[in-house]
Amino acid sequence: MSVKHIFLPAASIIKLFIVFFLLITNSKAEDNNIKQYSNDEGVLSIMYHRFDENKYPSTNIQMNIFLEQIQLIKDLNYDFIHPENFEKNFNIPKKQKKILITIDDAFQSFYEVAWPFLKENKIPFILFVSTEPVGNKGYMTWDQIKEVEQESFAIIGHHSHSHDYLIDVSNEDFIKDIETANKIFTEKIGYIPSLFSYPFGEYSEFMRQYISKNFTYAFGQHSGVIDVNKEKFQLPRFPINENYGELKRFTSIIKTYPLEYKKLLPLEKKLNKSNNPPLFSVEFFDNQKNIKNINCYSNEGNKWEKSKIQFDGNTLNIKFREAFLPRRGRINCSLNDNGKWRWFGTQFIVENN
Image 1 (cartoon, rainbow, N blue to C red):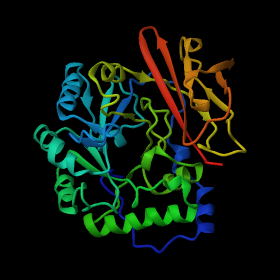
Image 2: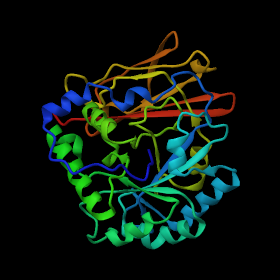
Image 3: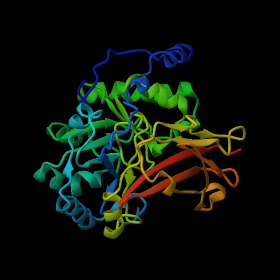
Image 4: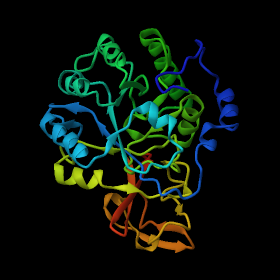
């Protein structure tokens, strides 16, 4: 299936009980991984939003810094991977790391500032679009999105309709939001994009399961490098912005490698009183060397500290100091594997009680 689009007939809102039935049968998420150690060099996905909009430092990157980052990638001899090749070759271990560029939200500054450079240099990327704000002040128009979409190296991705905190709404309203976007995408560009990006990188297990039934891949905003064993509907990306985009830090990110694992629990990434703090465990492969050198840091209580880890064979368990506080709980783990820094991150969304 091409990542460019998924053709679907017009459909009415799916009733919630039907969705629950679908979610327990044959999810695409169950057949995606080889689940054996692959020594994959990985695909490192980097995420951008705004360009040269200095009043939004948490989502902005200055264009001169972006150009330095692109040049660094070239100097390190890493290739930019086309999204279609990313899909086609997902289950093939990479002998050399690839870089996947993603742009979220379709801000006007992307079109005016970064798009001319990417077009001139034919650098492949995914532009994730939320349908509701298109044409509003500060956002691209549908004509501009169509212009980008016409280029073979550019792929349009699905970023919901409203870009709301969809994890906070009912499951039925979440589905309505996605289906509203589906109708608009079909009307405006003739198809529904097959790649999805969770707004704010937030998702519950219900959302992940639903997305796995309707898309081919989905990206979050937790850090890490994609390998053949990563779950296709919670793929990591490194957010790049003014606060964390300076070249020294960017260099360390680009030189990061995957930390492969068999299983990460819990599946549910939405926390409330009943499951906060979560029972967190990661089962690694026997082939992963130096695994006992791993270090993890977590921000329970809104304090970043070194996590208390224990091993049971190849399974790492973290005993959290206290509950995570709203809105997000994060865990980042790194491993110095004979000079190669391997990394993975996890994000939880914490309900306000």
